[in-house]
Image (cartoon, rainbow, N blue to C red; front, side, top):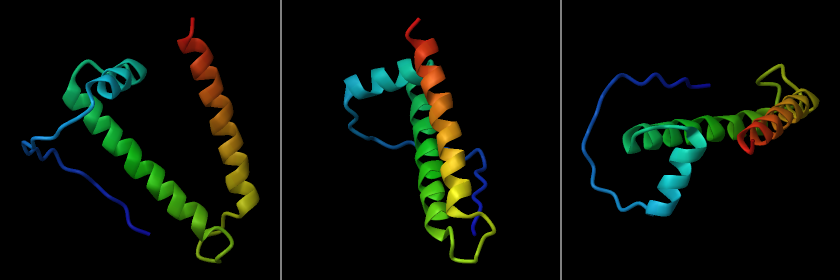
Length: 90
């Protein structure tokens, strides 16, 4: 398994981004700058894809976590997301 450590390295890139999507992402993530929002979104994408890879390895013998363990973790995460959504609607 690979772990990624990111150093504070910056580069300027010109990208066309849907303004409505960016505004919604800023509101949901409670970030104040476009840069912060995009950085957070990329970090979340990386985490999500790494979780998918981990899930794919369940039962392979490469890791000691079984599918039932991963399902339990998913249920806890989904419950937390429901709570956060409910709090955000207040």
